[in-house]
Length: 293
Image 1 (cartoon, rainbow, N blue to C red):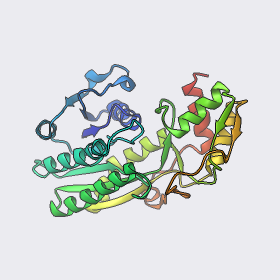
Image 2 (image 1 turned 120 degrees about the vertical axis):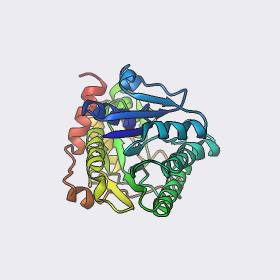
Image 3 (image 1 turned 45 degrees about the horizontal axis):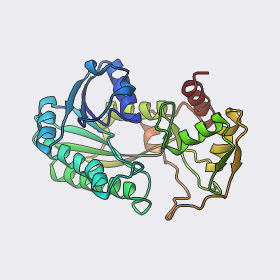
């Protein structure tokens, strides 16, 4: 299958790129000029790569690739002090440029978007991701079957090699280093933690069965289980045999904190997908690979 993938320098994008290349698919990568492909282990020659700056360059690369499927994982989380305009460009504008280019593609295209399970009120990141999903649904309907828009409501992904700015990675590294103290909220929030290999297998399922979906559809991807943040931290602490003191309740909850997040995986189950890792197994594998145990 001919796949156009955005965000291949990131945690999820690089995992998908490697998996689909090894599966024999034709994978083209749409990247910023400054994006580094360290996660692809110098295998960039295995991919058709377009490093685009302008809208016209993006549209030209889309036309050159003529993808059957676009998998959109590029985003900005707002953790690197990005401005509102930078979040808009990464999380909304880039996707719109690609969708507009696909309007004139020679064949119908399935657009698999990596959305957010968080409500738009939670953060500027969540707002921009929700706004793009609204645009995607509308344009898919307007384009009369030219685009099938699948919006993946992805839960809290984790695994080895993820960014150190992520909560899960920060907790693991802090516990592994035996830092004196880890300050936390009360940890009553529940989160659906899903291991990276399960995310990749879910996207693989969507890739092969996307034709079964309506013109536009949201689909939830997660483990279907939602332990508390406190349970996650205590499990990481135990599995790393850490001596770090866990100080729950020292930090306040964020404004508009989402207190419960859990995927309804019924639709994915109907497609034959099921997660292979529970939290304990996923954390064990993450620790083994992250710290080369």
